[in-house]
Amino acid sequence: MENRFHVNTPLLESSSMSKRLGTAVYLKMENSQPSGSFKIRGIGHLCQQLARQSRGVVCSSGGNAGMAAAYVARKLGVPATIVVPSSSPPLVVQKLQDEGATVKIIGKVWDDANAEALSLAEAEGLTYVPPFDHPLLWQGHASVMSEVAASLGPGVKPGAVLLSVGGGGLLCGVVQGLKDAGWMNVPIVAMETVGADCFNAAVKAGRLVTLDDITSEAKCLGAKTVCRRAFEYSRCSELDIISELVTDQQALHAVQTFLDEERVLVEMACGAALAAVYSGLIRRLQDEGRLTLSGPLLVIVCGGSSINMEQLANLKHKLQA
Image (cartoon, rainbow, N blue to C red; front, top):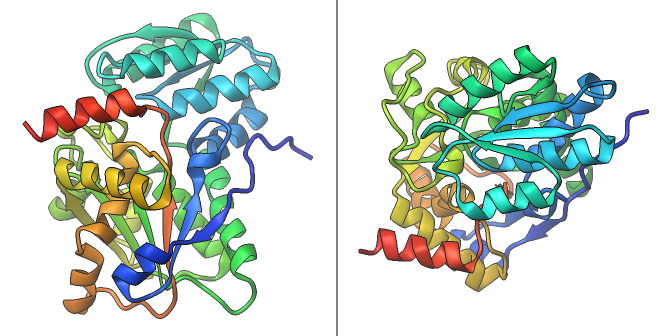
């Protein structure tokens, strides 16, 4: 029996979001995981399988995967090295160090940090923990949907699942979870911000696309190429995956509204999903006939460790200038 590092998170009905949408909205509160985001599900599962006898783990991360890897490594009693790009807020570096990890700051974007993590794993015989592209991660993330199924009870299924896409790990886990629950026909609304839109770019081009740069402030969505499995799912005729974008301003507005209405502070990457409700995008998809909600809208509140009031003030200053 494997130790679980993640907790069973609350599934809450949001009266204010439900009122906005005219249909029930449920929030899966992954922000309440010990590491601050859903990432601990997959990373806990992967480390359980691969890192028990390890000399240490190394993970490349803009924040949340690193936080999860550092937490799990501490619980397993193995050393953790987290490689972050220079775009990661000092707050994240501090949190990682507080968790007992060694932090290396390499390159400008995640892809640079990842190249360093891979070479460290090779040189020092460490277990490489990928932030989003591994079947064990997806298997771990799928547990989010089995919890939802248990909470909703027999005979009730979501009308749609709303989530954010960075590298595609959560999306792959949710698809896996929908398969396990027998809910393959539940549509997924996959949200990104303009400037961190590797999934949307791939969907539009019909092939994997590598972005030139990450220009969005939602740094935790900052992979330049989405994982191949997520792209393959977007082409699968059995699945209905709707890829949409919001601006940084819309994502930030969603973060602020969510803080006001639900009393919870999440990061911009999570704001991308919330913005689909607050900006009227879900309503528009319904009006256009692209989305029919035959049950409650399930919003995965993926959380995020790279936000505090100071960071929020910085974002407001940057994006409203």
